[in-house]
Image 1 (spheres, rainbow, N blue to C red):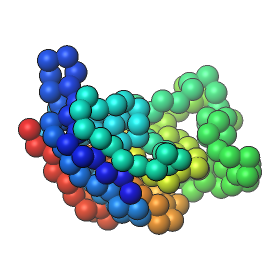
Image 2 (tube, helix red, strand yellow):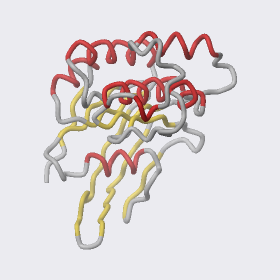
Image 3 (spheres, rainbow, N blue to C red):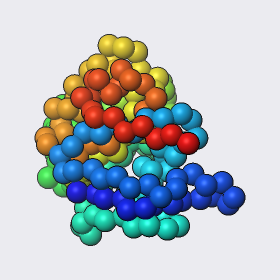
Image 4 (cartoon, rainbow, N blue to C red):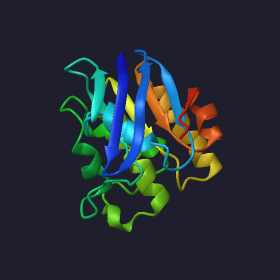
Amino acid sequence: MIKLENVTKSFGEHNVLENLSLSFEKGSRTAIMGPSGCGKTTLFLLVAGLISPDFGEIVRSEDMRFSAVFQDDRLCENLSLYANIKLVVSKSVGKAQIISDIQALGLGGFENKPVSLLSGGMKRRASIIRAMLAEFDTLVLDEPFNGLDSETRQAAAEYILDKLDGRTLILITHNPDDVKLLGCEIINLNK
């Protein structure tokens, strides 16, 4: 379980989150929605431990492992698709598994291409594969389907659900269709 208790986070004079309390149960699928600028991505960064709250407390297991798809793809442009994925997987994940997952999201044949040569939608799918093959207890997806057509979005959602295997999912999105695809309960953040 991840629990936020009266969490406040500001950037300079801009108060993004104020006295926010909520929890994410183990194995839950939760979508964080709300207007632009309401603190969705800030919440993501707080939950994942990438930034600290100004006030309040975030309670989670010390050894909790996170995997994420960020708004930007955060891929190493000069490395191949395969190498980008291999960077984050444990040694127990072999080449055949990585290639199988690449093919599952329609990227077969691009394994050895530098990421810089891939389209935006292909990079998005690469980011999803990389996140799903990393070791994690909690998966955080920040607008994971941006740049994907409806058919590819459906395939990516099915892939995520297949690989999730009962672990916790936190989705940050503006798109109610993404919430439906991943079967999430909704928390609305409002100013």
